[in-house]
Image (cartoon, rainbow, N blue to C red; front, side, top):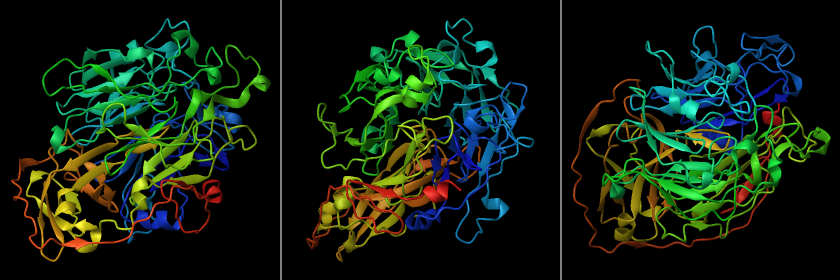
Length: 619
């Protein structure tokens, strides 16, 4: 696992960005040991994505900054910092940083296991801060929009120059690798001017892309730069930064023909003037309630009907900066965030002129939400949300917080810093402590232990077999086999309460129940690279909703380019045992929250455990 905290010589400006990167990482997660890695350029508010070979790449960020978040000691041509002599960070606005996968046999101190970060060799065509990133079917990445120079929202007000904002906004898109393609203007970025940072992007089965920002939505043919407008977001709710709603694609399953539906929850419905400008919002945002509204959108309905937003169950409370984590059992966790306000920080608003009068320091949000909740996309409407039995965190997770699924199916939660620099004495301080959330399935004492998991998953082609021993389930073997699924989960690149590239795919399977009680799963390969892009993922086996530990696999051929795709194989018919094999064991449940540090044994179920890593992250 990689956690990049933006810390350099004592400074901590940014959220951690988090990405799972190689099979050796579970050992490091289990021992809570971190290895400090140097990143030369400023990663503050970068975007990022996986590559087909398992590498992670981050794009853009802030110019060099100094103490207090001020512009670095040397300026670049855009007016931001080129270098800062105290914090020794370089301009990150055009940077492309690559971290290649390493294994247990590699030395983490070797150059091949370190970030490659040299803008003189590889960089973007445009300066981008808070840009969107989405992997394409060939494993390349499209980068969209962003700030040139930063601020609260990406506009002046009144908004008379929506394309350029006097040189502070970037309304183009580009590709990585570029392969001769130059950056081009995207009209959607002009239409959504001001509220289009970290736009929500999802590659679709058609090869086009859903893009959502401000209250607008399009299907985008990125090859020909053609935009097809879809209905606006209902109820004027903004979901992108700094409204920062929770957004995720629902699980893709054979039974729904891998229909791609996006869930949007929370954010903020402030009127347009209230968003203010680069400097700060026009109102005291911390007094403005976050939205609890949820909407579903299927951009390409299978029946050919026109796409339309569908009102879903409201969240249990309003949230800004809530983050969706798709769990291996197909349910969706929302965690972190605030009841009021927005992401971002400022020293004033249009209603509060003096920093000394700001009630929460620089924070533009209030009311931290410590209680997570779980959404069941297959539950009847009206009963999809629950927080019953879930633990509550006592740590405020607001601006610059992150979360990601771990290989053992728990969730790592980290970050929060609604401040321009390190501030450990304000109301919502710089937070170095991380936590682990254990979903309810951790109450099971028996978890699947699959064998035969391949290292690579192809697109189409021959099926493969996974074996579950009798000790992997309780009760009837036939019933266990009928209720077993094999899924790929990509946690994505996590930053700023969002996971770029997060996606869940259930692989089709049949089974043979053997007379010794073991179960052989016959598993189909992934359908195609438009449904699940090439690159790293965790493979989980679920038995009655209880996941195994995830196995890291590479989906596709590991290279950027058109992915080989074969016809889907015909799976054998399922075979049941005639011996009525059953196993029994005792299960336990514990819904408490336990605070632990150091090397203590994790024991909380449906709870949140604090792990003390302050000294590791603040070096």
